[in-house]
Image 1 (cartoon, rainbow, N blue to C red):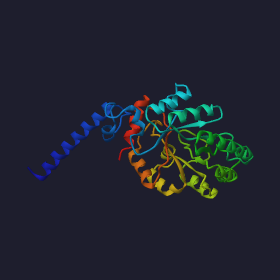
Image 2: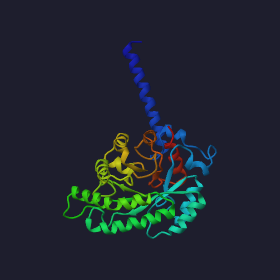
Image 3: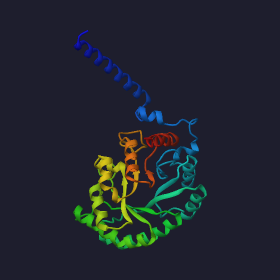
Image 4: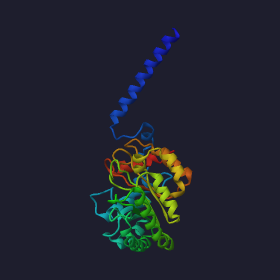
Length: 311
């Protein structure tokens, strides 16, 4: 056979093989894991469900606002513990029974990784709200102590009429500087969360890592860092591992969700095995928040999370 014939035969075989693999992948469904991840997903007889959430290197904190949504709030903590997750996180604390959460978390040996202390409105990016922000941080620090929690999310706010983005960012810096001594005295870290404006939070004033890094550098406090949500970062800027390396000294907390869909790892485009490995390599040992909604049932989502924690 000639060299040309051999090459033609090889290309034909390779094309057929690729088509076969593609067909097999399609048969698994659009939200299935990659082939490599699928091999890593533990079946019920390989790993007890009670250990599923703690089967890898990463300490995951389930966002109980997005998992088990039909369950009463306290039952969601029980569900997280049943799957072996070591920690949970939640959003706004104001209308929750903090004493009951603290008691149950202690009973279940669950860490409260973080909660939201200051949300979208009123905006931290407006100086008219700074006095209320400082008062809120004082109160949130007391809540954090009850929960034995050392991190709380703060949000920059949506665009303010008549202000440039630079002015709004400077106002965030000023507000964080006022509250930083309180956070430092209480040992509770304010973690500022950049959003994305393409999909989820149009009109928000803070998105992507460079501005968030600059803001925290200007505040210059060990208790003012970034809630580095990898889902928002993927949509805003991509290049996840390089960006993490560049801003690592300002990362206070990591969250994740896959994209598109904001579901668990293995349902979208992000290869979280590589991203989590990079975070671990950088020295990150804090919890990683699962601020994602399960694409199907929570057990399948937990298995996909475990598969993403293999490298």
